[in-house]
Image (cartoon, rainbow, N blue to C red):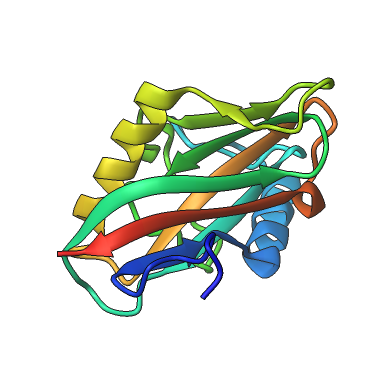
Length: 159
């Protein structure tokens, strides 16, 4: 087993771009005549990602694994409600705080992050894993980063 592979008791849950839901949500933005109060509409630099829990289970958050293959910044925000494919957008009050922010500087190979907020967010994901089968994320790309430049997952250990 390679040194950087997860241990057997750990679960590496990748965040996967949901291209269909991102496209549908962007179409909703184009067709919307009037925005509902508090509705969060998907912006051009935002995409919807998801992670599928194999089963509802008790997990302990271990770490974020985020790789940016070029300099830039991503902000990962979770949704407290299920984002449905029928174009139902989340309300701004349904977005989880704090968000996890990751960035890579021009002169560095390492990814930096807002550690305290990202750790708190990861711990909240552990709680949601007890009741969810799917978790949706809104990822905002900035400073030249696009979905193709990101590889992200959340690593948990089973309790």
